[in-house]
Structures are given as C-alpha cells and as structure tokens.
Length: 178
View 1: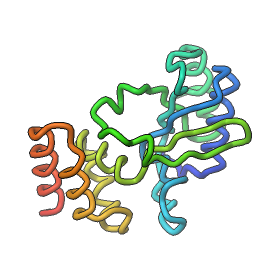
View 2: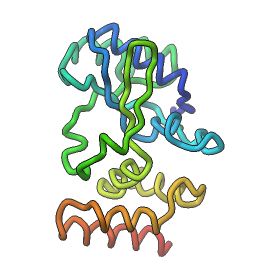
View 3: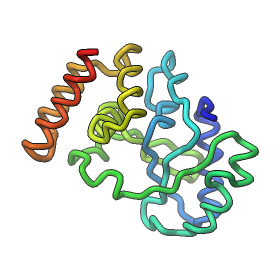
C-alpha cells in the first residue's frame, strides 16, 4: 500500500542504505522524489510504496543485504510502510544528457542524494509509458507539476533519437487527448 514519502522518510531510507553499503552518495528517481523536487503545495504527490535508489559509485554494494533488510517485505518495509527498490544507472540509459546538471542534490549530513529533476522524471515516465506512468503524468498535468507543453518541448529538445522523439510525442498526444 502506497504512502506519502516525505523528505524525512527519504532521509531514513538513505541513512539505512548508507549504513549497509558504506557508500555516501546515492541517486534517487521515481515518484517518491517529488518529496524533494515538487513545489511545497504538490509534495503530497510523492505517494509510493517504494523509493527507487542506488549507490552512485558502486551500484552493487551490499545489494543482497540491502534487498533483504530494506526491500519489499523486509523489516524496514513493515516498520516504515515503504521499501527501498535497489535499481541502478541502467534505469537512466536513455535519459537525455545533462540530467545530472538538472538534478537536485540534497544533503543528509555527510550523505548526498542526486534526485532526478521534474522534467527528467516526466520524460522518464513518458518513455516507460506503463499504465502507472501514464496515470502519474495525467496527475502531474492536472496538478500543474509540469505542463504537456513543457514536456513536449523537453522531448523535442532532448530525445536521443528521432524515432524515440516521435514515439514519445505520440504517447504524449494520446495522454492529453483523453
């Protein structure tokens, strides 16, 4: 069951992942990051059952241990109502160059988290185009988190190939017609 992820919960997840991995720098993507990147009035959109995160330098650091301790069905999940989904940089293989410069960096003491920017998140969701991603985009448009025009312009400017650009614009058109 999804819960509202807050900055404090994101910090809790980061600190626990750092304790298990020994890493100090992480990347977080997905809907839960709205707890950081959304305007304050829209941070309630950060509703998820997981936080998608990985250690930036050593993606596989303590992978099995952190999945057992922080993953779905773990004691962490039972205690906090959400879990840490250990993904990796492969989730951003088709993300437009410059995403790191557009990302937000947050600090939790000595720990650093690079959080995917709003338009990059919307781009990522549009490219994946799963039902849950399309629902997220509809919610984001309705709330004014991003506009279809902003996303279309971003795709036009940043899509990695003409075919991907065309596919994403078609997906966006279908989303905004309904």
